[in-house]
Length: 349
Image 1 (cartoon, rainbow, N blue to C red):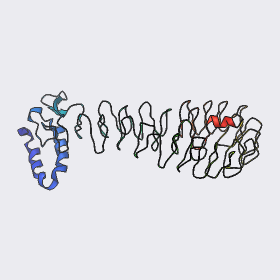
Image 2 (image 1 turned 135 degrees about the vertical axis):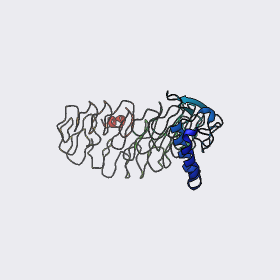
Image 3 (image 1 turned 90 degrees about the vertical axis):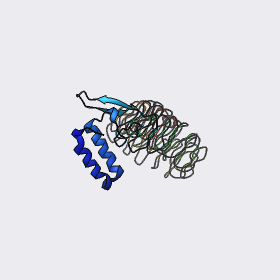
Image 4 (image 1 turned 90 degrees about the horizontal axis):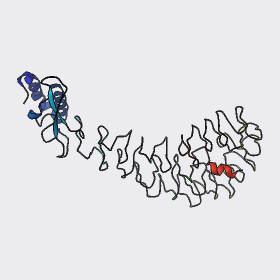
């Protein structure tokens, strides 16, 4: 029991015991414990940290109380050891409201090898049950990433690599909301050989079940894809050339809505010699003045084009890295919703 100097607080607590119930008393006890710095030798089970490590929540027998002090004379109390928390006691190997892996913890305090929704270590998980080597929606471990930055082996919320899972259960070889082919992924994150809804290569898939050689919502040709049925040599909603794709009608060597040069495409997919909606010169133009080797509204590299600054072989709406794939970061061989892979683009030339 507490010292005589604190009898009024405990008297108040005893009066509140009936009407408030155990849930409210747990919060009161936690507050009292922090205010009074309960001595470790007199730790009461009704207090926040009992001798058997219980506070109204279920904890394992591994938890132990350890003395602590803020340096003030006579102000000493108990806390759980480093794998526990004062307001949400965790066991040594961590468990929370959801099922987590062996090495993980909950949303608040995490074990040495684990983190929470924002930062995850090599062996961690998130709110849902994840596999041993996987992560969650935000920051992922070394070989896995999230929606923004993806490494060579990784995917995003919906589709994860062989050893990963997300909120849903995915098969061994990469699936998303529906059934995808062996080599493919989902809407935003694509593997080395894959793309998304609009443009898919030979081994790619989309939201719907796709054939081995690339089909999405409609029937697609061997090397081309789009929401509509495409011919053997690549056509979508309009007529496309042999090696080109776009929602507009394209000439034999790649054109779009307006008059384009011999080797060009439109706003979203531009190869080394590109064009867009307006009349373009032989080696690239766009809404703005473009450089000799292809630039559009922003500064573009020698082989790439798009609305932002692009890497040497990549294109999309943001700055792209050399090895990545996603809506913001694309690898040498990868693409997203608006950009074909460098390999596919080079086939046009």
